[in-house]
Amino acid sequence: QVQLVESGGGLVQAGGSLRLSCADSGRTFSSYRMVGWFRQAPGKEREFVAAISWSVGSTHYADSVKGRFTISGDYAKNTVYMQMNSLKPEDTAVYYCAAAPRGPSLGPTAGYAYWGQGTQVTVSS
Image (spheres, rainbow, N blue to C red):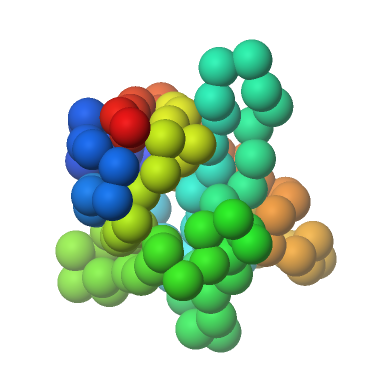
């Protein structure tokens, strides 16, 4: 059974950093096609932030976070991280970890079937 659990959110001032973690207690991340992070701000639609393909070793980022956010995986801990630096007030959102099952590739932004409960990130100006 897939169970994605995020942690690491919180309140930070603009320019600060946070590291989000996503752990899967049910399956190993290597069994997925892609593991990603999405976010949803109040009144806005959920948007793609970053993704990692463990089998290929590739990473993908939304333009809005390139150069500031880094997604990585720890095989031994079965955990995916997202290091967020130079945070801006517009990064404020609930951040969700998601996993895409293996199958036809839909790219890094689609095909996610499993979702965590989300963790709040608030960046004050």
